[in-house]
Image 1 (cartoon, rainbow, N blue to C red):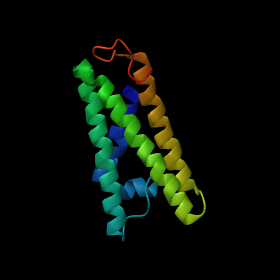
Image 2: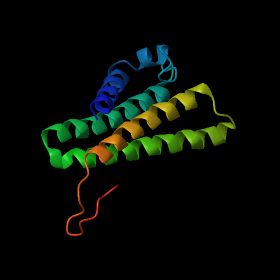
Image 3: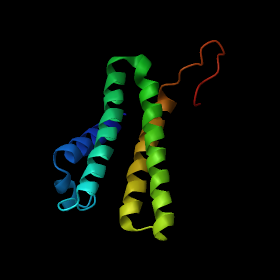
Length: 131
C-alpha cells in the first residue's frame, strides 16, 4: 500500500499545485487556456489525495487499513469505468485513455494486494471479508 499512497500523493500534489506541468509530461490534458480541463485535473488530484490520506491513516490506525484499501480499489474501478465510457463516446481507445486504465489498474491491483495480505474476519461470522 506504500507505493499506492506514494503515487497518489505525487500525482495529487502535482495536479493541485502545477496541473500545467502534468500536462507537459502528458499525465493530464492541456490546461493552459482551458480552465475546464484545469478544474478536472485539480478535482481528480484531490480525490487521489483523499484516498492517499486514508492510506496514511491506515498506517497509524490498523483498523482503517482495509477501509483505505477498499476505497482505493473502488476509486480505481470507477476511474477505469469512466475511461471506458469515454472510449465508447470517442469510438476509440487512445493513448490517454489507455494510460488512465493502466494507471488505475495498477492502483487497484496494489490496493487489492493489501486486502489479501491483511485479512480481517467479518464480525460475528468468522468469514473473511474480500477473501
